Image 1 (cartoon, rainbow, N blue to C red):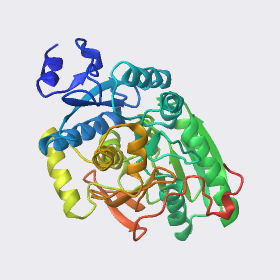
Image 2: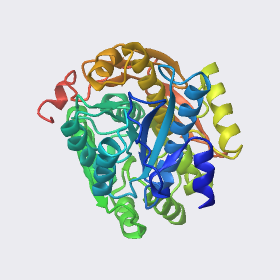
Image 3: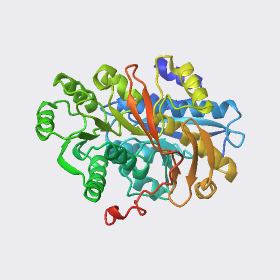
Image 4: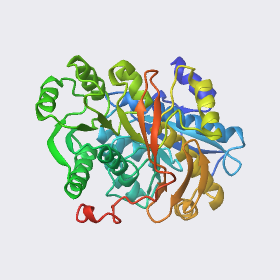
Length: 400
């Protein structure tokens, strides 16, 4: 296929293209180092994950342009998780055992991560996972470069509470991230005098929300906390607007909608709504300005940057820094070397916490603008130490 030939011409290997396996040269034994890039390039999650793949490929290209890692080029081996959690596990196994990659950058949903976790632990291989998640997890073979609970969900709840939002309705997709996140939200609510008026889940890919929107309207909450994922958000917000519900009437705090999803939803359907992340395309700073220029130069001026794809981009650079420090791609050496690595990246300075393999990250609340970008309205003032099990929060006792 013509697009496979094009990828081969720039040194990329796509599993679906056939031909010589991407990892036929071992990670430590040849002229290049194979790295896995594993995201949903099809199915309901493709709306979110394709751009993460693109940002990881940009980071690989940048690293290769400055001489690679340990004097060798990085050679991405791209696989499609197809929005199917068993497929993620199968592709991870292939990348590790057949392609012999030095690390894998991939996943989005917690279901995909949990499907892959035993594969990486069994093989003692490294997964760099780029998306905010519900916490209550750590693995010696996963580095988590997105936010954990105390860097996104807890700041989002603080923000709503400080603005007098004391009655919440919870809406989520029916899988592990929303259900676990909502356990955290309900524990927070009990401790802070917040009432949960409803809690509803729909399958990933669900598109009919009129009945749920009627339930929300009848409950009369002060705000909705939204953990829907994938293209279900398109249907939900379009149908909210069709029902005549505006952001001014009912704020919907979302933790899985970034600039890429806003494009799919349509800024006229979601403008004015709050979101919680650690990075926006509008985040100030020289590193982000350079990153946005590089991304749009490579993929087109109409493309936007977002938190998950920035976290994926960061993951590649952090791994490369750890390999350089270790002097090898050997997994245990890289794990040891990674602890304490600190880089100035598009979202600001991030530091790897060796104890949890999560990052210190700055929390940011933003409002979706009419131009489809997100404007920051609050931040934590500096990086927050990762606390995936919420050990520092008495109200979370027993959740883990």
